Image (tube, rainbow, N blue to C red):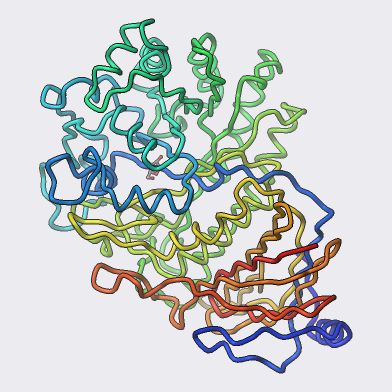
Length: 561
Ligand code: AHR
């Protein structure tokens, strides 16, 4: 990212005769000061089309995600549509949720899809993968659907949830526990036309049955196959992947297989898989839609310990160093994308395989979950909104490389958009970021350059730095969308915004920021964090100045000619 000194900006802004923004509804006072930062949007420099699926979701049978989160049951007093929480569906529609990954996560590799079919009362009760997880909150019951899954939420229920929400399904197949044959039969159940197979008949028989095939395109072949998904070596996994995907019936659907990719910076996993696949024949890359990548952000170390289990920070109680270090960890996403992409390109020279970041988000220690059954449940503050903003911007900037991303996880787990328990339901700050980024979906990403004074803070006993402003830009017809994150906990950044290659006709801002970065929404106070809209004054020609609030995510909607 370009860095420019304060003096240079001041000169630049003054010379450009930049206009200043108007006051926001919460009193962002009009400033007479010159800009100290710069944002330059290069409308002519296209990066690629932003896949809508970058704004995807992930729902696993884990703690309160499915039971209590998505599925409340048809007889519940909680408003539901065929057993599915109606408030959740309505909120998903508002953010145009493009895709949902299910049923895991680690759960996927111990899940038999057949258990979740047929009459609910006859479905088997199975031990959930997470039954003995050390992270269960104090007071969590020893029984219940969170530990012993009654399979009331199966494939038909999930597909109904997708249909109601307007999202596509991304099904993760069990590579560790089931064979390739069961995988083909799942594809058959889901996609074969009516009247052709027993699978199609069972699908239609219900409950929540469907005569029409679901036409599911996205299929994950195992999850974290380097770990919970089988402890394979990358070479072994490459062979398994080929075996599973060699001859899957299509039923007229353009199947898109997603291989189980690397954990964070495990470049050997990427190299091993790609080199082994290339050895067999580079043509095989044409059959791989996506290569997974998982990266969670947690407060590692900070002078305490390097044991990531013990060193996770708190979702609600964090100091300045923990705030910035969490963002820094999440911000590694950019270099991870670049580095995995470079390795992939050594073998798949035409880059037919794209990246699918099918798990990302912040991961804290237990204690802030809204109910003890919500294993890995956690609160979501303005810090998480900033992390979401900078991560989604990263994906936009790499629109040529990232085909899909799935925030982990949708509801009641890790970096959630929703928290729910029984009839209580709340949108988190991260939900609002997803809502603000909707105009980027399917738009053309264009290059944007950011320069701002760096943030300086103390990391344990040594000084540390973090970038001052970052973001992404996209164009859709006459609409330019510029999203910007200011990570500074306390200082605003006054930026000169220049659009090169188009004339700015007007601009509006939507801002998510709070005085306190610990601010969050709760069942008691559900609207503590919400975006606000602001007018932006733009001069007839040339750049304008906008003041980015501290610890904020901002969307500038700019009409260009
Ligand atoms: O999202 C929680 C877990 O994190 C997933 O089940 C697994 O894939 C990852 O390790």
